[in-house]
Image (tube, rainbow, N blue to C red; front, side, top):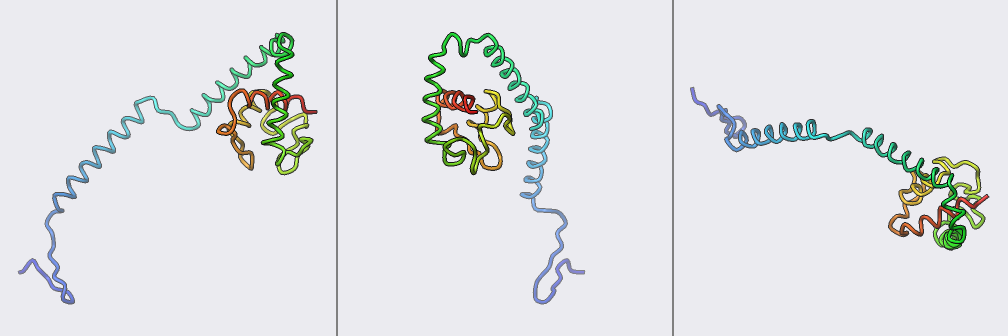
Length: 163
């Protein structure tokens, strides 16, 4: 019996094994998969939730450090004049970057009321800094590319003076 069959003018020949190129590609893919899994399983890689937990712990340590500085009065008493300068610069930056969403009086508009006693993401220095630099879901953009560290600190000082 012939190994070739013809169906509607198309010659069909049953292969006994797959082409060598496909077997080589399959072997390479299998080896790559084993190496990839081994690397991520045994290299200390962590999931996003573990990375978030580490970041949250680091942020809470920074929060404690900020509270310690504020409790000793180092941020205001010894350099009260510097804080006033920060607030003045922060007021100018607020007028440039923030007024369009939060309003001239910071009572809200598109963005939330910044004179409120509580903020959705926290009202500590660290929380406000994170909000300004990283942004928040639902409308608050990141300003890390438009401001430097000193400017962010100035905005934070100004925002903390709002009542």
